[in-house]
Image 1 (cartoon, rainbow, N blue to C red):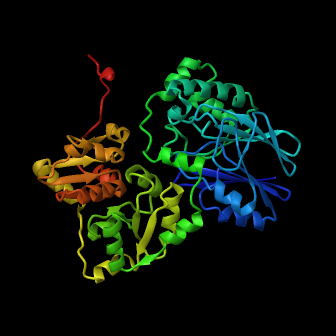
Image 2: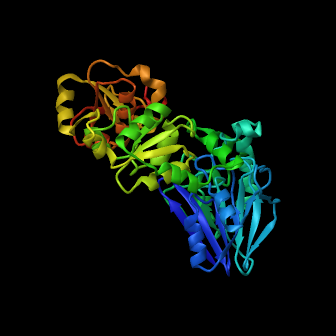
Length: 471
């Protein structure tokens, strides 16, 4: 028996490769499927099944391409109704893979079709569960994403999730291994551990949602408390996973067309495409194509694109470090952005050499910012998450979380110097580039972000909950 977790950190996503004898199974594959095909070929196996735990919201699965290229059968649990050929398994149904058995456990709550796959070893002993978004390490799947499709409230879905966990998962032995679909950093949960594999017994001790004494009402309250609005691209990814999509091969071929500066400019003007500059924040600040947006590839690239670029069908033109173009197109496709039209041949250097207009964003060192702050307490925009801001922030700073920047534009002055920072500099440059493209010409990025600010004497404070203040 071979069980391998294939974890993609930038998406906080776990796909799985199982093999017994000359038969293999892939669970929740990413969009690019060639690595799975090559792995099976190298191991002398045929991919028999592609198991989907549910219709994913945060990424586009590779199930359709993988099935078409290998002849594997796509499997969903009860209540799934995809618009392509798939086997809809019954609750309790068993699938054979070599000498292994995979039992289908219908575990609705995160979504109505959510399914956990129980792996039994060659002796028939329960070995592991592939829990999808039903059970994470330290948390459970959020119950608010499927409300519209299920015609239910998040509280009703949370109640179903409670029942699923208690009747289908918590009854299993403590030594059963838990393989979830996501880890810390995913927007599909709120309290996940940094680890990506654990035993069910340890989760019964560590996971608040598996507390033995927890009532149904307590579970519903705790699971639904503190849920932030989901990223706007989630429903579009669900639709693609359910209805189908363009082959990844076609997406990459179209997206990796090399365009001269003249062709690039013409394409931008004719299509209204978003110019997406994926270089580092430091390189971008020194010079960029006017009106381009910076989301660096060496960060949580795809989730930020999904959160900030409206509509997965929006045309995109890329500026990238040479040699990384296909990687970027692939990572965009992972979250459904299939309409990349090409990239600037030679990168930003070729644009510069062409003599076309360029723009820049002023950046100051932390020492210079500290000096300016002492002189006049300038306007400071903190684009970190509310939880980060509440833990500690510069006195009088304005919290404008990057996720919701578009909803707070009126709060940001266009006159006078405005300083922007995040934790380390990645998110602040994204915010600055978006604002710059929308007409803010008074922005200054604080190099090093709040981590650097902590090393200065700039006055800071923390949010204090009123209920904790002594009277």
